[in-house]
Amino acid sequence: GRIVWNRQRFVKDPDTGKRQARLNPEEDWVIQEVPELRILDDDLWNAVKARQKTNTVARDARGIADVRKVNYRRRPKYLFSGLTKCACCGGGYSAISKELIGCSTARNKGTCDNRMNIRRDELESRVLNALRTRLVDPELFAEFCDAYTRETNRLRMESGAGIDKAEAELKRIAREEEKLMDLYMRDAISIEAVKERGDKLRARKAELQDFLASTDEPPPLLHPSMALQYRARVQQLYETLQGDDETQRIEAAEIIRSLIDRIVLTPG
Image 1: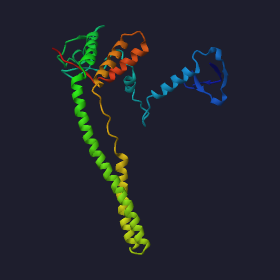
Image 2: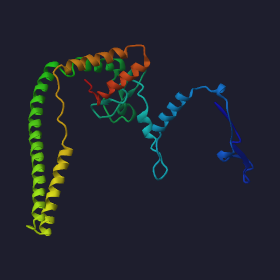
Image 3: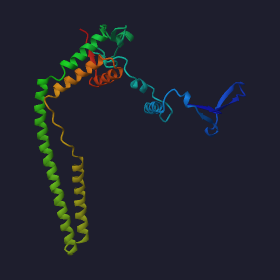
Image 4: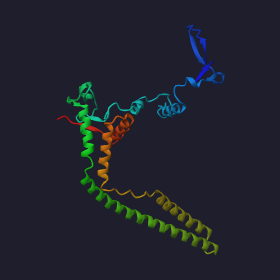
């Protein structure tokens, strides 16, 4: 959306005789706005630039950038790319044809005996089916919720008792500080004794205040129907993957990938 003149100048290299570009100071540039030539609007342009800035790979003190991070930020080409591992060698799986994937170590290095392949669509179908039907069994989850609730209530009572005890001791310290000051005002105790006792009280007071400030809130209770809710959400994600909206499919795929640490493929 703008044209810039006098951005650079050319000088001749005395050794080679070739022209070389040199950037002029920015204050010498001549800039003309031409909105009719603009391809993107400002909002989209600024949003892209902001995202590029967050994805920039910084250089270290030696001026070297770790370009491997770029691969980590790349969106996976397939649903479970990078998550499949070989049970025999621990290596990853990669495409060996249009539809099949196999152990990369067995084919690239020959140090693994696992030569079995699996169709990508078969793998995705098995894993998605397991997420929908086998993970978080409602009956087992209900039993877990009961045990979790009992343990949470026990910890809450212990934590509550500790908090009540700390708050009571803080009140006792406050009363003792008042009594100490009253004795000093009546010349019943020396300034040295006041300072010594006061330092101990302040130190203990600080410990109690730190304890109360760092005490975590008790964890939330789980409801037994959470397992059914989980399965319903996974079913919705699965149906979204089959839809036509690419944006929604990408979002659903990222959520499903976040549920999986790794997929171990065992030949058999």
